[in-house]
Length: 418
Image (cartoon, rainbow, N blue to C red; front, side, top):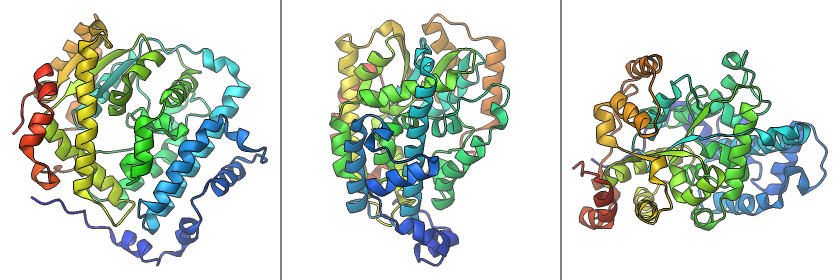
Protein backbone atom coordinates (compact mmCIF):
# COMPACT_ATOMS: atom_id res chain seq x y z
CA UNK A 1 0.00 0.00 0.00
CA UNK A 2 0.98 3.65 -0.30
CA UNK A 3 0.14 6.06 2.50
CA UNK A 4 -2.31 8.76 1.48
CA UNK A 5 -3.65 11.47 3.77
CA UNK A 6 -7.29 10.96 4.76
CA UNK A 7 -9.90 13.00 2.94
CA UNK A 8 -10.68 16.26 4.69
CA UNK A 9 -14.26 16.86 5.86
CA UNK A 10 -16.12 19.51 3.84
CA UNK A 11 -16.11 21.96 6.72
CA UNK A 12 -12.32 21.72 7.01
CA UNK A 13 -11.90 22.37 3.29
CA UNK A 14 -14.16 25.41 3.61
CA UNK A 15 -12.17 26.75 6.57
CA UNK A 16 -8.86 26.34 4.78
CA UNK A 17 -10.27 28.20 1.78
CA UNK A 18 -11.11 31.04 4.13
CA UNK A 19 -14.85 30.66 3.69
CA UNK A 20 -15.66 30.26 7.39
CA UNK A 21 -15.10 33.75 8.73
CA UNK A 22 -15.36 33.38 12.55
CA UNK A 23 -11.97 31.70 13.01
CA UNK A 24 -10.09 33.50 10.24
CA UNK A 25 -9.20 36.55 12.32
CA UNK A 26 -8.03 34.46 15.27
CA UNK A 27 -6.04 32.16 12.98
CA UNK A 28 -4.37 35.14 11.34
CA UNK A 29 -3.12 36.66 14.59
CA UNK A 30 0.67 36.46 14.95
CA UNK A 31 2.21 33.48 16.70
CA UNK A 32 4.72 35.54 18.64
CA UNK A 33 5.58 35.65 22.28
CA UNK A 34 4.49 39.15 23.35
CA UNK A 35 1.04 38.81 21.80
CA UNK A 36 0.47 35.32 23.22
CA UNK A 37 1.55 36.27 26.73
CA UNK A 38 -0.67 39.36 26.62
CA UNK A 39 -3.65 37.30 25.50
CA UNK A 40 -3.09 34.72 28.24
CA UNK A 41 -2.89 37.48 30.87
CA UNK A 42 -6.07 39.06 29.52
CA UNK A 43 -7.96 35.77 29.64
CA UNK A 44 -6.76 35.22 33.20
CA UNK A 45 -7.64 38.78 34.20
CA UNK A 46 -4.20 39.72 35.49
CA UNK A 47 -2.13 42.84 34.91
CA UNK A 48 1.15 42.70 33.04
CA UNK A 49 3.85 42.47 35.69
CA UNK A 50 6.54 41.44 33.22
CA UNK A 51 7.96 38.07 32.18
CA UNK A 52 8.02 36.90 35.79
CA UNK A 53 4.26 36.33 35.56
CA UNK A 54 5.09 33.06 33.84
CA UNK A 55 7.68 31.92 36.35
CA UNK A 56 11.23 30.92 35.53
CA UNK A 57 12.65 32.69 32.49
CA UNK A 58 13.69 29.24 31.27
CA UNK A 59 10.25 29.08 29.66
CA UNK A 60 11.13 31.61 27.01
CA UNK A 61 13.96 29.77 25.25
CA UNK A 62 11.79 26.80 24.21
CA UNK A 63 8.76 29.01 23.60
CA UNK A 64 10.68 31.35 21.29
CA UNK A 65 12.35 28.45 19.49
CA UNK A 66 9.03 26.71 18.95
CA UNK A 67 7.27 29.85 17.75
CA UNK A 68 10.01 30.51 15.21
CA UNK A 69 10.00 26.89 14.02
CA UNK A 70 6.23 26.53 13.77
CA UNK A 71 6.05 29.79 11.81
CA UNK A 72 8.94 29.10 9.46
CA UNK A 73 8.97 25.31 9.10
CA UNK A 74 5.56 23.79 9.84
CA UNK A 75 3.70 25.20 6.81
CA UNK A 76 0.47 25.54 8.77
CA UNK A 77 -2.81 25.86 6.96
CA UNK A 78 -5.48 28.19 8.29
CA UNK A 79 -7.19 25.69 10.56
CA UNK A 80 -3.78 24.50 11.73
CA UNK A 81 -2.88 28.04 12.77
CA UNK A 82 -6.20 28.37 14.59
CA UNK A 83 -5.74 25.11 16.51
CA UNK A 84 -2.12 25.95 17.28
CA UNK A 85 -2.96 29.33 18.70
CA UNK A 86 -5.68 27.85 20.94
CA UNK A 87 -3.27 25.11 22.05
CA UNK A 88 -0.58 27.62 22.99
CA UNK A 89 -2.99 29.92 24.82
CA UNK A 90 -4.36 26.99 26.82
CA UNK A 91 -0.82 26.04 27.86
CA UNK A 92 0.11 29.59 28.86
CA UNK A 93 -3.10 30.06 30.85
CA UNK A 94 -2.54 26.67 32.45
CA UNK A 95 0.98 27.68 33.45
CA UNK A 96 -0.34 30.86 35.05
CA UNK A 97 -2.94 28.85 36.97
CA UNK A 98 -0.36 26.34 38.21
CA UNK A 99 1.99 29.07 39.42
CA UNK A 100 -0.86 30.97 41.06
CA UNK A 101 -2.15 27.85 42.80
CA UNK A 102 1.29 26.86 44.09
CA UNK A 103 1.76 30.38 45.49
CA UNK A 104 -1.65 30.37 47.17
CA UNK A 105 -1.28 26.83 48.58
CA UNK A 106 2.46 26.28 49.11
CA UNK A 107 1.75 23.02 50.91
CA UNK A 108 0.86 21.42 47.59
CA UNK A 109 4.54 20.82 46.82
CA UNK A 110 4.67 18.60 49.89
CA UNK A 111 2.24 16.13 48.37
CA UNK A 112 4.12 12.83 48.11
CA UNK A 113 4.04 10.99 44.79
CA UNK A 114 4.97 7.59 46.16
CA UNK A 115 6.13 4.62 44.06
CA UNK A 116 4.42 5.59 40.81
CA UNK A 117 3.94 2.85 38.23
CA UNK A 118 5.27 4.13 34.89
CA UNK A 119 4.50 2.43 31.58
CA UNK A 120 6.97 3.27 28.84
CA UNK A 121 8.44 1.83 25.68
CA UNK A 122 8.49 2.83 22.05
CA UNK A 123 5.16 4.17 20.78
CA UNK A 124 2.69 1.74 19.24
CA UNK A 125 3.86 -1.08 21.51
CA UNK A 126 0.70 -1.41 23.61
CA UNK A 127 1.51 1.29 26.17
CA UNK A 128 -1.91 2.96 25.86
CA UNK A 129 -4.07 -0.11 26.33
CA UNK A 130 -1.83 -1.49 29.09
CA UNK A 131 -2.04 1.86 30.90
CA UNK A 132 -5.82 1.88 30.51
CA UNK A 133 -6.08 -1.60 32.01
CA UNK A 134 -3.88 -0.72 34.97
CA UNK A 135 -6.06 2.34 35.53
CA UNK A 136 -9.07 0.06 36.06
CA UNK A 137 -7.58 -1.15 39.36
CA UNK A 138 -9.30 0.83 42.17
CA UNK A 139 -5.96 0.86 43.99
CA UNK A 140 -4.49 2.99 41.19
CA UNK A 141 -5.10 6.48 39.92
CA UNK A 142 -4.34 7.43 36.33
CA UNK A 143 -4.60 11.01 35.07
CA UNK A 144 -7.46 11.62 32.65
CA UNK A 145 -7.25 13.87 29.64
CA UNK A 146 -9.19 16.68 31.26
CA UNK A 147 -7.04 16.56 34.40
CA UNK A 148 -3.77 16.99 32.51
CA UNK A 149 -5.11 19.72 30.23
CA UNK A 150 -6.82 21.65 33.06
CA UNK A 151 -5.35 20.55 36.42
CA UNK A 152 -6.24 23.74 38.36
CA UNK A 153 -8.20 23.94 40.59
CA UNK A 154 -7.64 20.49 42.09
CA UNK A 155 -10.58 18.23 41.22
CA UNK A 156 -12.89 17.30 44.07
CA UNK A 157 -13.63 13.59 44.55
CA UNK A 158 -17.34 14.31 45.03
CA UNK A 159 -17.73 16.19 41.75
CA UNK A 160 -14.90 15.01 39.50
CA UNK A 161 -17.17 12.77 37.41
CA UNK A 162 -19.24 15.78 36.32
CA UNK A 163 -16.54 18.46 36.26
CA UNK A 164 -17.14 21.04 33.53
CA UNK A 165 -13.51 20.68 32.44
CA UNK A 166 -14.30 17.25 30.98
CA UNK A 167 -16.30 18.81 28.15
CA UNK A 168 -13.73 21.59 27.80
CA UNK A 169 -10.93 19.08 27.28
CA UNK A 170 -13.11 16.95 25.05
CA UNK A 171 -13.62 19.83 22.66
CA UNK A 172 -9.86 20.24 22.25
CA UNK A 173 -8.93 16.57 22.14
CA UNK A 174 -11.76 15.49 19.84
CA UNK A 175 -11.09 18.36 17.44
CA UNK A 176 -8.04 16.56 16.06
CA UNK A 177 -10.20 13.61 15.02
CA UNK A 178 -12.83 15.92 13.53
CA UNK A 179 -10.15 17.54 11.37
CA UNK A 180 -8.17 14.38 10.51
CA UNK A 181 -10.84 11.77 10.00
CA UNK A 182 -8.72 8.59 10.32
CA UNK A 183 -7.19 9.49 13.68
CA UNK A 184 -9.58 7.53 15.93
CA UNK A 185 -8.61 4.27 14.21
CA UNK A 186 -4.97 5.00 15.09
CA UNK A 187 -5.18 6.64 18.51
CA UNK A 188 -8.35 7.88 20.19
CA UNK A 189 -8.27 10.96 22.42
CA UNK A 190 -10.95 12.25 24.79
CA UNK A 191 -11.37 14.14 28.03
CA UNK A 192 -12.22 11.05 30.08
CA UNK A 193 -9.66 8.66 28.65
CA UNK A 194 -6.34 8.13 30.39
CA UNK A 195 -3.72 10.56 29.12
CA UNK A 196 0.01 10.35 28.86
CA UNK A 197 2.55 12.34 30.80
CA UNK A 198 3.74 14.62 28.02
CA UNK A 199 0.62 16.78 28.45
CA UNK A 200 1.79 17.70 31.97
CA UNK A 201 5.26 18.43 30.59
CA UNK A 202 3.98 20.73 27.87
CA UNK A 203 3.46 23.56 30.37
CA UNK A 204 7.25 24.03 30.13
CA UNK A 205 7.26 23.78 26.31
CA UNK A 206 9.60 20.78 26.62
CA UNK A 207 7.42 18.04 25.21
CA UNK A 208 6.95 15.88 22.15
CA UNK A 209 3.41 17.18 21.77
CA UNK A 210 5.09 19.93 19.72
CA UNK A 211 7.26 17.69 17.56
CA UNK A 212 4.48 15.16 16.98
CA UNK A 213 1.94 17.68 15.73
CA UNK A 214 4.31 19.83 13.70
CA UNK A 215 7.29 19.57 11.37
CA UNK A 216 9.65 21.73 13.44
CA UNK A 217 13.14 20.24 12.95
CA UNK A 218 15.07 23.09 14.57
CA UNK A 219 12.93 22.88 17.70
CA UNK A 220 13.12 19.07 17.64
CA UNK A 221 16.93 19.23 17.59
CA UNK A 222 16.90 21.56 20.60
CA UNK A 223 14.38 19.39 22.46
CA UNK A 224 16.46 16.27 21.90
CA UNK A 225 19.47 17.87 23.60
CA UNK A 226 17.88 20.05 26.29
CA UNK A 227 17.72 19.59 30.06
CA UNK A 228 14.38 17.85 30.73
CA UNK A 229 14.36 18.51 34.48
CA UNK A 230 11.94 21.48 34.18
CA UNK A 231 9.51 19.23 32.31
CA UNK A 232 9.63 16.61 35.05
CA UNK A 233 9.30 19.27 37.75
CA UNK A 234 6.13 20.44 35.98
CA UNK A 235 4.93 16.85 35.73
CA UNK A 236 5.33 16.38 39.48
CA UNK A 237 3.55 19.65 40.28
CA UNK A 238 0.58 18.69 38.10
CA UNK A 239 0.26 15.36 39.91
CA UNK A 240 0.58 17.09 43.28
CA UNK A 241 -2.22 19.51 42.39
CA UNK A 242 -4.44 16.69 41.14
CA UNK A 243 -3.80 14.73 44.34
CA UNK A 244 -4.43 17.64 46.71
CA UNK A 245 -8.07 16.81 47.51
CA UNK A 246 -7.80 13.03 47.25
CA UNK A 247 -6.70 10.13 49.38
CA UNK A 248 -3.31 9.23 47.86
CA UNK A 249 -3.22 6.18 45.60
CA UNK A 250 -0.45 4.77 43.47
CA UNK A 251 -0.23 6.92 40.35
CA UNK A 252 -0.23 4.88 37.16
CA UNK A 253 1.48 6.87 34.42
CA UNK A 254 2.40 6.37 30.80
CA UNK A 255 4.43 7.86 27.99
CA UNK A 256 6.94 6.67 25.41
CA UNK A 257 8.81 9.95 25.95
CA UNK A 258 10.28 8.60 29.19
CA UNK A 259 12.57 6.40 27.09
CA UNK A 260 14.42 9.57 26.04
CA UNK A 261 15.02 10.64 29.64
CA UNK A 262 15.25 7.60 31.90
CA UNK A 263 17.89 9.08 34.25
CA UNK A 264 15.83 12.28 34.64
CA UNK A 265 12.63 10.32 35.23
CA UNK A 266 14.35 8.24 37.93
CA UNK A 267 15.90 11.30 39.53
CA UNK A 268 12.39 12.78 39.83
CA UNK A 269 10.78 9.53 40.98
CA UNK A 270 13.55 7.32 42.41
CA UNK A 271 11.04 4.79 43.79
CA UNK A 272 9.15 4.39 40.50
CA UNK A 273 8.30 0.98 39.10
CA UNK A 274 8.74 0.74 35.34
CA UNK A 275 6.83 -1.42 32.90
CA UNK A 276 8.65 -1.38 29.56
CA UNK A 277 6.86 -2.64 26.46
CA UNK A 278 8.64 -4.17 23.46
CA UNK A 279 7.62 -4.74 19.84
CA UNK A 280 9.28 -5.38 16.48
CA UNK A 281 10.87 -1.99 15.66
CA UNK A 282 9.91 -2.22 11.99
CA UNK A 283 6.24 -2.52 12.96
CA UNK A 284 6.71 0.36 15.40
CA UNK A 285 8.14 2.55 12.63
CA UNK A 286 5.29 1.79 10.26
CA UNK A 287 2.64 2.51 12.88
CA UNK A 288 4.20 5.59 14.48
CA UNK A 289 4.94 7.20 11.11
CA UNK A 290 1.28 6.80 10.18
CA UNK A 291 0.21 8.39 13.49
CA UNK A 292 2.58 11.36 13.24
CA UNK A 293 1.65 11.98 9.61
CA UNK A 294 -2.05 11.98 10.50
CA UNK A 295 -1.51 14.41 13.38
CA UNK A 296 0.51 16.75 11.16
CA UNK A 297 -2.08 16.49 8.37
CA UNK A 298 -4.55 18.03 10.81
CA UNK A 299 -2.39 21.17 10.85
CA UNK A 300 -0.71 21.35 7.45
CA UNK A 301 -1.23 20.47 3.80
CA UNK A 302 2.43 19.38 3.61
CA UNK A 303 3.41 16.06 5.19
CA UNK A 304 6.73 14.41 4.35
CA UNK A 305 6.08 10.76 5.19
CA UNK A 306 9.61 9.58 4.43
CA UNK A 307 11.16 12.32 6.56
CA UNK A 308 8.98 11.30 9.51
CA UNK A 309 10.11 7.70 9.08
CA UNK A 310 13.81 8.60 8.86
CA UNK A 311 13.63 10.85 11.90
CA UNK A 312 11.88 8.27 14.06
CA UNK A 313 14.13 5.45 12.93
CA UNK A 314 17.12 7.45 14.20
CA UNK A 315 15.39 8.56 17.38
CA UNK A 316 14.10 5.17 18.42
CA UNK A 317 17.35 3.45 17.58
CA UNK A 318 19.07 5.82 20.00
CA UNK A 319 16.36 5.26 22.63
CA UNK A 320 16.21 1.49 22.36
CA UNK A 321 19.95 1.06 22.11
CA UNK A 322 20.21 3.32 25.14
CA UNK A 323 17.70 1.14 26.95
CA UNK A 324 19.89 -1.91 26.39
CA UNK A 325 22.87 -0.02 27.81
CA UNK A 326 20.82 1.24 30.77
CA UNK A 327 19.93 -2.34 31.67
CA UNK A 328 23.46 -3.66 31.14
CA UNK A 329 25.11 -0.79 33.04
CA UNK A 330 22.81 -0.90 36.05
CA UNK A 331 21.13 2.46 35.40
CA UNK A 332 17.85 0.56 35.75
CA UNK A 333 17.32 -1.52 38.88
CA UNK A 334 15.90 -4.72 37.43
CA UNK A 335 13.97 -5.32 40.67
CA UNK A 336 11.89 -2.27 39.79
CA UNK A 337 11.49 -3.02 36.07
CA UNK A 338 9.21 -5.45 34.29
CA UNK A 339 9.41 -6.09 30.55
CA UNK A 340 6.35 -6.87 28.42
CA UNK A 341 6.39 -8.15 24.85
CA UNK A 342 3.65 -6.75 22.64
CA UNK A 343 2.85 -10.14 21.12
CA UNK A 344 2.34 -11.71 24.56
CA UNK A 345 0.19 -8.83 25.73
CA UNK A 346 -2.04 -8.88 22.65
CA UNK A 347 -2.49 -12.66 22.99
CA UNK A 348 -3.36 -12.61 26.69
CA UNK A 349 -3.65 -9.11 28.18
CA UNK A 350 -4.91 -10.12 31.62
CA UNK A 351 -2.19 -12.74 32.05
CA UNK A 352 0.32 -10.04 31.15
CA UNK A 353 -1.13 -7.75 33.81
CA UNK A 354 -0.99 -10.55 36.38
CA UNK A 355 2.66 -11.17 35.49
CA UNK A 356 3.34 -7.46 35.98
CA UNK A 357 1.77 -7.49 39.43
CA UNK A 358 3.71 -10.60 40.44
CA UNK A 359 6.96 -9.00 39.27
CA UNK A 360 6.44 -6.21 41.80
CA UNK A 361 5.12 -8.42 44.58
CA UNK A 362 1.55 -7.21 44.24
CA UNK A 363 -1.70 -9.15 44.03
CA UNK A 364 -4.28 -8.50 41.34
CA UNK A 365 -7.59 -8.50 43.19
CA UNK A 366 -10.53 -10.25 41.55
CA UNK A 367 -12.57 -7.04 41.43
CA UNK A 368 -9.77 -5.26 39.55
CA UNK A 369 -9.37 -8.15 37.12
CA UNK A 370 -13.11 -8.08 36.42
CA UNK A 371 -13.00 -4.36 35.70
CA UNK A 372 -10.09 -4.92 33.32
CA UNK A 373 -11.94 -7.70 31.50
CA UNK A 374 -15.01 -5.47 31.18
CA UNK A 375 -12.87 -2.70 29.74
CA UNK A 376 -11.47 -5.04 27.09
CA UNK A 377 -14.97 -6.20 26.19
CA UNK A 378 -16.16 -2.60 25.77
CA UNK A 379 -13.18 -1.54 23.71
CA UNK A 380 -12.09 -4.34 21.36
CA UNK A 381 -9.18 -3.80 19.01
CA UNK A 382 -10.38 -2.10 15.83
CA UNK A 383 -13.35 -0.45 17.56
CA UNK A 384 -13.01 2.60 15.28
CA UNK A 385 -11.81 0.74 12.20
CA UNK A 386 -8.56 -0.83 11.14
CA UNK A 387 -5.30 1.08 11.30
CA UNK A 388 -3.70 0.39 7.93
CA UNK A 389 0.01 1.03 7.47
CA UNK A 390 2.95 -0.62 5.73
CA UNK A 391 6.69 -0.55 6.26
CA UNK A 392 7.13 -0.34 2.48
CA UNK A 393 5.66 3.18 2.54
CA UNK A 394 8.52 4.50 4.68
CA UNK A 395 11.28 4.58 2.11
CA UNK A 396 13.56 2.68 4.48
CA UNK A 397 15.71 -0.37 3.70
CA UNK A 398 14.31 -3.24 5.81
CA UNK A 399 17.65 -5.06 5.96
CA UNK A 400 19.43 -1.93 7.15
CA UNK A 401 16.77 -1.32 9.79
CA UNK A 402 16.94 -4.93 10.98
CA UNK A 403 20.67 -4.50 11.42
CA UNK A 404 20.20 -1.16 13.16
CA UNK A 405 17.87 -2.65 15.79
CA UNK A 406 19.51 -6.09 16.09
CA UNK A 407 21.14 -5.36 19.45
CA UNK A 408 17.84 -4.26 20.94
CA UNK A 409 15.85 -7.21 19.59
CA UNK A 410 18.43 -9.71 20.77
CA UNK A 411 18.71 -8.18 24.25
CA UNK A 412 14.98 -8.32 24.94
CA UNK A 413 13.98 -11.30 22.81
CA UNK A 414 11.77 -9.20 20.56
CA UNK A 415 10.56 -11.27 17.59
CA UNK A 416 10.12 -10.02 14.04
CA UNK A 417 6.47 -9.54 13.14
CA UNK A 418 7.12 -9.87 9.41
